[in-house]
Length: 304
Image (tube, rainbow, N blue to C red):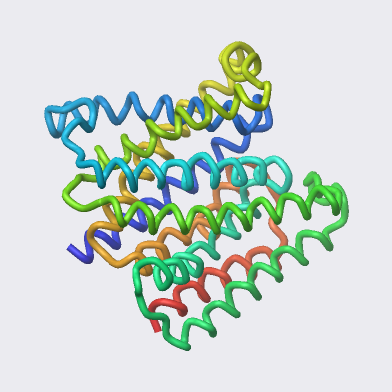
C-alpha cells in the first residue's frame, strides 16, 4: 500500500501540472475567484457521479461528525485560502514560476505535522530546507534578470512580481496546513467522499467571498458568458480538484504525509516541458537549475 500511495502522489503532481497550465489562461480571462468557484462546482458534480458509481452514494451522507469537521476546515484552508493566493500568483508571475514555490509545501507540511500531529523532524531536514530555499532564489533571480520581452516573454514589473512571489509563498503555507488538517479527518472515510466534503465547503466559501467582495455580477453573470474560459475551467476541474485532489487524499491515507507531499512537489519540474512545448514559453537555464535544486532539496529533506 505504501507503493500505491507513492504512485498516487506522483499522479497528483502530474494532474496538478496540467491544471496549473489550464487555469492560468482561464484566470487571466475571468479572474481568480470565478475560476476557483466554477472549478469546484465542476469537481463536485464529477465526484457525485464517481461516488454513485463506486459507493452507491452520490453524497457523503455516511461521513462522521469528525470527518465533516476536519475536512470542512481543510476545504476552507486548502481551497478557499490557499487557492486564492495560488491563482492570483498565476496572474502576477505565471504558472511556471508559481508552482516552484510549491516545493516549499513539504517543508511546511513537516513543520505543521510536528506542531499538530507530533511527528518528529530530524536535523537533516535543515539541509533540504536550505536547498529548497536556494533553488527558489536561483529561479527568482534568474527570471528577474531576464531582459524585458526576451524571447517573447513578458517579465512582470518588480512590484508586481514581488506581490506574486508573496502570494505563491502563502499558497504553499496554507496548502501544507490543509494537508495536515485533511489527514486528521480521513479516519474511516474514502478519498472520494472526503474530497466531496472539502469541495462542498469550498463552493460555499468562494460564493460567499464573491458576495462580500462585491464581485457577484462578475462571478455569476459575466464569467459564465466567456466560453473559452469556461471550457478551460471544465478541463482544469477534471484534472485538478477531481482527479488530482482525490489522488492526493488517497496518497495521504496510504503513505506518510512527508513522502506524499514530496512527490506532489515535483510539479515545478514537470511543468517545464509543456510550458515550452505547448505554450511556447522560453525558459532560462537558471529557472531549470532552480526548479531542480528545489525539488532535490525537498526529496533530501524527507528521504535521506
